[in-house]
Length: 546
Ligand code: AMP
Ligand code: DBH
Image 1 (tube, helix red, strand yellow):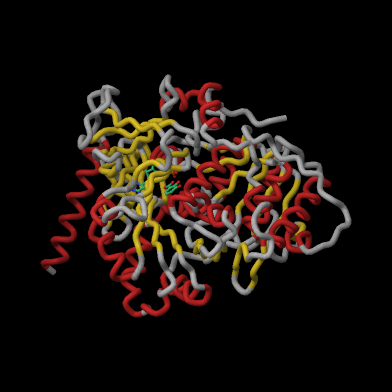
Image 2 (cartoon, rainbow, N blue to C red):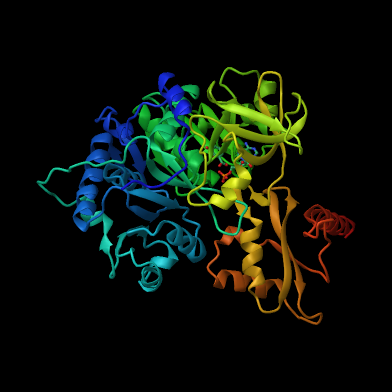
């Protein structure tokens, strides 16, 4: 059984194969074909060679096969930045079991939503996460989703099998691999989304493998590359742009960091001679502040990749001097298209644009509100299709009809300007999403949860400017009764009680009597963003006076 997804039309698939972009190989070849004695992953005091990564993932695959997992099944995985993330990923890929890799910051709300969508047979998680300290949540999840019968945990646990014990057990059995076909779904990426339920992104072996290979080439990754994985390992950026997989493809080494914190990372860079790191802009800002005191520690660093949210030109300009390495900007999306500034681009291009598409068959249109293409230099919405950009979200026909046009272009909701050389600069957004320093929040998801509160009549979540994060979130609340006595603290507690990931809990609440509306009667978010901008400005002026 294969997993249903919206395929590329035959004529496109043919072209992608003819061009050599799609090679019909399973993703597990990334590690199976690497020089087996090279170090693949460094994680704390452990280092795993490719041979160990391959054999551990085979050992786990045998175990999972014995449990009854088969091609076309799905798995829910939530792991922190540890080597086991890759062991688990490739074990599942060997069997044709497609995982959703939830972020470690995700909580009950998100894991439940993913479970409902993919009905996984197994959960693989860590006892470091509060949800898995005991069996309560897993039991509830498996009660509501009957297919979910198995659980494996990293770390000691009294109520589940231990992943570590399986990986280090011996067996004389040989795995019968059964990966899904290369043009079938290998795994699901997560979308930052703009809708009530988070949408899943089906990625095939062919399309993902290509994006990894081409990215690795653009960024000049080699067996000498030592890539620091400091962003959440399940995110598309550190996974594939070129990320850990780009390093695996060329037999390079991935150094895991538990967080993007400057001190933690600087120590790892110095100890393991890291050559490439990838960050979101707020983390970069903290590195730039800390770096002058740690120049020697950073001497091996050659390339600093920044993406996920808009990088200010002023921060960008500091990178070469302060970090002593080259900057690369990346505009990517888990749906596919990834743009890179090239390593030999002039400095102005590198600091003022977010790059150009990675390959010649990436088709990009910049569209005005009427859907017509605008001239270079003018602002419009970025729409794209290509050899690694999906043609539809998983099982979401209604939403797909809105964001994919008849020609199969994905309308990203990003407002960009394209220059004559094809480089894109992000200037804004036309989607109901807050980009909190690279972490995306779908406004509708939080608004719907707030509306379940018995004292709330209307809610609207909008972005507000923040000097560190770029954007933070502000919830405007219209209470059902005027003398409501509601406090921000109560609503934060309420949302946490619903199991919402911390980064999605609004940074600020504003209580108002009614929401301003657009002519068609929707909440006027442009007006609300202006209200909060003015209030923040007023507060900061008052603080300056005081
Ligand atoms: P996601 O849907 O979570 O994969 O997020 C992809 C979105 O992140 C893009 O559509 C952009 O809105 C945003 N994004 C990614 N990289 C950049 C960047 N370098 N500058 C501005 N926005 C970015
Ligand atoms: O924000 C993103 O989703 C992103 C950023 C940079 C991404 O998916 C990527 C590179 O591949």
